[in-house]
Length: 382
Image 1 (cartoon, rainbow, N blue to C red):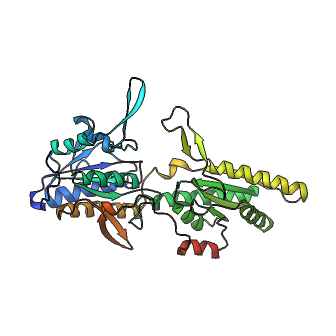
Image 2 (image 1 turned 180 degrees about the vertical axis):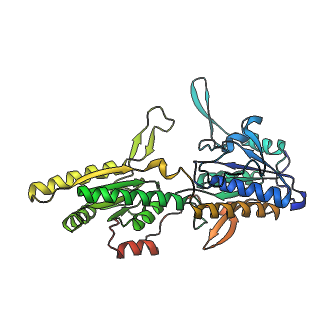
């Protein structure tokens, strides 16, 4: 098969594709709109939308849809993605059922052939760290790809921020604000579990923005005694209530992350449940305290925000960032700079080779300014 790296100038490019892989995220439609409008109106290219991530390059013709300025009209403020997303269509480990069993296949030859059959001079791949790794490997095999990073977790290495993060932090902060009023009314400790498997960016930002008493992140295993002491202090104060924000990947020092069983799912175990687990640990610790030294008893309630952080309309900040990244991806294609990922460095858009996108997520540095700010505010980080 001939190389799919055309090295074409903008004047020779005729058709590009765009797909959204991984989970949904506020701002995906804004990227699609920006790619289409800049490609069509500025360069006169055709744009094909590829449905359901890489699945669309494995399936038949019904997985492809032409995109025009009319097609993307009005989608800027819409959540989700008009192209659909698939988080389990890794072409290197494509899972399918055969004779009642699940098997994994390498279908990358089909993906490469499909790109050539569709006459795509480039494909804009929008996704998280896992998607960027797939894009890097496909590019090394000859696929003409450009990456646009997305994730509410803000954990893609190489970019300071990803679109979707601001919206998720806004949702979490609003939830904290609402829970605080009921916590104060009933003198309770409210535990808010937010997303963040390996990186605690959402928990840290929303915890500081919402004035939390405790923020627990995966990067720093927590000491239960420190958390309990902080809550005891909060209830002894005038407020007689407390807010704990915990990332789903946080865990106790000397322990491990909490998983929950998912019946009937391909993944039998999925990360989650730290909120309830923490509540149980704190309740047991409080009962020990009350036996030895009876005092003020406080209730604990848990709220798991879950996918509500990923849904809904993107914030204005995310719309702007997603739009900038979409047009930047088209500029890279026009300049023949394939195999690159758009990245935000400070307030400026840049790009870096997909080969430099790390295999590990971008986590919270424990010496970063926001961590120091949290500590100086008296927020317990465990």
